[in-house]
Amino acid sequence: FDGLDDYLFISDSEYTKLREQVTVEAWVNPQPNIQTKTMYQLVASRSVSYELTISDTGILRTGITNEDRDRVVFNSYKAVNMYKWNHIAVTYDGEYVRAYANGELVGQKAQTGLIKDNGFFMVGRLSSGYHYQGLIDELKVHNTALSADEIRQSFVKISQKEYVGPIIFDFEEDGTNFTDKSGNIGAFCPTNF
Image 1 (cartoon, helix red, strand yellow):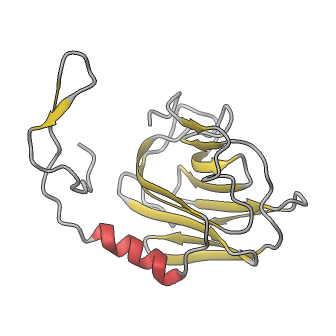
Image 2 (cartoon, rainbow, N blue to C red; image 1 turned 180 degrees about the vertical axis):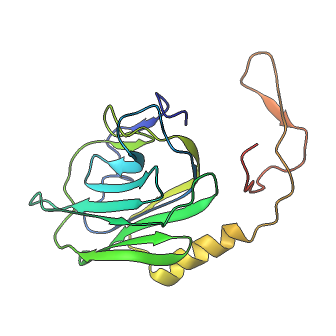
């Protein structure tokens, strides 16, 4: 994501239109976005019904808006490391919004009610702002609130994979077919290359 105009837009979908519980988790390798006037960068959100956002200074910002339009959003300071891979997550179980960074609970606040049914699911920006700059991998949206142990396992599962080198693709001229020249398909790459 280049911090200017790269984003993913998903229209109404049963997979993102979650009302009772949700978990959004992702691996991010962010960079400060000096090209925009806001310090926040959206990783993933359904409008602001549920959100997973970071800042240029390492803040993890998470929140849930319920159907009564009560929005609970909070910052977890020094949770995200710039230029490094971080596993981040937000969960909502109908009672609490919880934020996780690298397998650890870094914040929580009480919230009740159904999640507001509003907007589209976006990755990399919110409406026309909050553009994300950096890499995003393993983005997952669950229709349940994962437990602290499940979040930790998700972090450990990926972070302990052995780095085996970059993936090298040989694209055909039409741009639609490619072959892997490295033999590393499916390998986790913990550095920007």
